[in-house]
Length: 500
Image 1: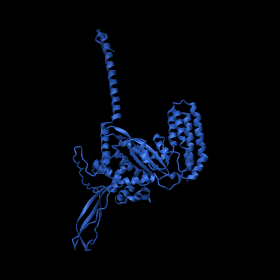
Image 2: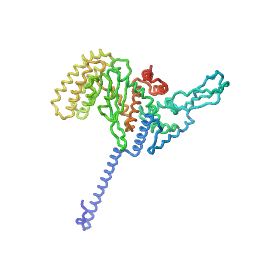
Image 3: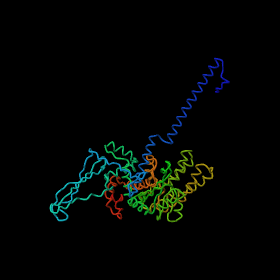
């Protein structure tokens, strides 16, 4: 309705009708404006997050950068932007209500120099914050200072090695923090809040420093798992995206976690399973080439084009994944209810039924069973898909799914002739579940160094899970022993050796 002065009526009745109409139009406009404001607010919240979410993201960014800084173990104290040495967080005394467990380290009864009797001069007490599943305790390491009555020589038991030199956390507490962060996906700032409810006040930056130092300490163990995984005649490979904060502009870019697994249990091997993770700031083909340098054998993987360089070298042989083929038909069936897609899913199910029958059998028996039962099914599936493809428009999702299947099945046939190979790459995909859940909580990785520290811890956590070890017990044991453990005997600390 126009409100031009030229058309405003002068008669009272017409003016009343005009006013009523104008008020109605204004009311409709107000409602529309309110609706649009609500939509814009919802879009802004979805895109940028609430203020609380922004604060959470800042906390996550800070803790990840602090973990990375601690993991790099700088030789000089950290400095701020002005070049001044950063002040360390003030260490608070451990709460009085936590139970104390005294551990007396005696220097002995006789002087080591002359053999005379010792008398106590005093004692040094070192508090160590420890976590016993379900409760916090304070270990008090008491070391009496003893003086010889004859020669006045002073004797005292040495401090035992600890995961963090001169730090207060015990191995059990450090294991608890790592499991919370990387297995239960609790960021450090949330753990600080939980600890505070127990009367234990720790700074997030302090926890981040401990996590970074422990990641650096455990790196040789992750390297041992890498060597073990790449010693297998067949491995499983996959990658998943994760947001990484781009320095300088506050935005994120897409980085990658890569998983390489070894699991020989399906063909009856007693060899222990393991998973090795790597973090990279991108998905360039050079990344898997660097990871698998020196590896020779089969690799279960998806159709990532950058793997082709590995295959062309002849050292790595590809085995495709039926789960990826099946997934495309499932997507088409869910969206369109296609009868052809449904038939493809049913035929693929027959292949998995054969695998269920073959699971746990030695390689030669698996080959015989697959040649007898699986090969005819796979041959029939391939010929049937080839006959269905010309009936479809080339641009339809179903046609794309069929073309993908026909291409990948040519690279899948190796599993029919080798009993140590699998029908799919689900072993690697399962190893990515923890990261997929975790990234919903931490939203992004703060830096490349932080991502590499996380890859070290993920390697240990997932390998412990695959071996049905209690991660808390195993990691506590490792952190208790690793500081004094010889580097050339790191394999003794691997999960399957701990279990024995």
